[in-house]
Length: 296
Image (cartoon, rainbow, N blue to C red):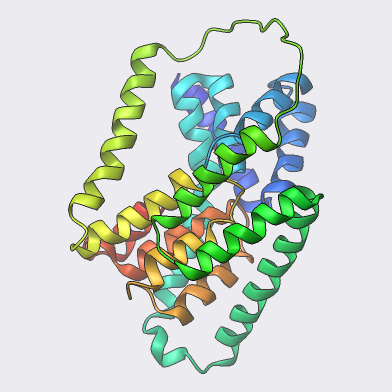
C-alpha cells in the first residue's frame, strides 16, 4: 500500500511541476500520462471520472487526479496523487506570499502592477470562453445576466451559493430534456458509513467558521472552505467568492489579492492553490506556513 502511495505521488509530482495552462490543459496532461503512457485506466473510465468532476464543486483537475490515484492505490493512492499534483504550486504560492512581505510597500512597483494587469486579462479570457460554452442561447444568457445583477447589487458571501442553488433549481425546469431510462451498471464504491462520515465532516467544517465569525482565523478559514466546497466551474469562477470572503472584510488587501491571482497563472498545477497564497497572506493561526496549508 505504501508503494502505491509513493508511485502515485511521484507520477503526480512530475505533473505538478510541468502541467501549465489551467484545468482544461491538465486534462490533456492526465490523459497522456495515465491513459496512454502508464495505462492505469481505460479511455472510457477516464471519461467517466472526468465527467464526474464536472458535477461536484472544487478544482476539477485536482479531483480528477485524486480519483485516478484512488483507482490505482485506494485512499493512500488518491491522497498521494492529490498531494503530488498540488504541492509544487502550493509551495510556490506560499513562497510568493512570503516574498511579497509588506505588500503595501510594494503597491507602486511595476512588477506588482503587471501581475494585476495579467489577472484582469486572464479573467476576461476565461469569461469569454465560458460565455461561448455555457451561454450559447438566450435562456442561458438571461440567467447569467440576472445572476450578475443580483451579485452586483448584493456582493455578500452567502448570496453567491444561494444564487447558484437558485440557478440549479430553475435549470431543472428550463433545460429539462426527455430521455429514455437506461440500465446502469452498479459498481462497488465507498461504503455507506464512509459517505455519512464525509458528509458529517463537511457540515461541521462549514458550521464552525460561521459559529465563530468574529474570529479572524475562523472567518478566513470559512471563506476559503466555502470557496472550495460551493463553487462549480473551475479556478476562475472561484475568484469573486474569494474576493468577497477575504478582501471585503479587510483580511487581504486588494493589491495583494490581484497580485496573488496573477502569480497563480504563472505556476503549474491547480489554480486553486491561490488559496494557499491567501491563507499565507492572512497568516491564519499566527503562521504563514500554517495559513498556507489551511488555504490549500
